[in-house]
Length: 192
Image (tube, rainbow, N blue to C red; front, side, top):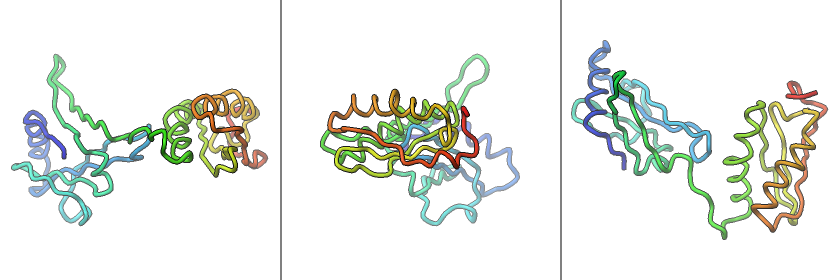
């Protein structure tokens, strides 16, 4: 499931020994699992503050509790502490954290969501924006913009020159892309 190398166990043991609680452990969870924005979070955890559904990994000197919903995304994960000239750093390698690209025979909606999450939304995030799939209707992908894209004066350019071009190039079965966002209600557009 998850490999915790001796150097990481020692690092965690030293950290935990500096705390005031004797039964303190660590809890790990994945925020935004299966998306490009997925991140591993590690925190101190008293047994009574952790979820009953957590997977418990006994590491001799302490317990590592893993959020139950995060377990599939931490399959084959490794935690290491790599020393360097400035001391060192904790390294978490989790190859499944962001999920995997759907197969060519996966439902079209899954493939569209994957492209939105892995390619398009990271770019839009630099302007505080995002786009999500509403539906797919007879070859037309229906989207809704949010954040800085909601009410942005350049959203039509983003839709036609960015989102639609990308989706049509990657998924030839898409005939059109349509935006159903009411841009007149945007409260914080990136560009007015």
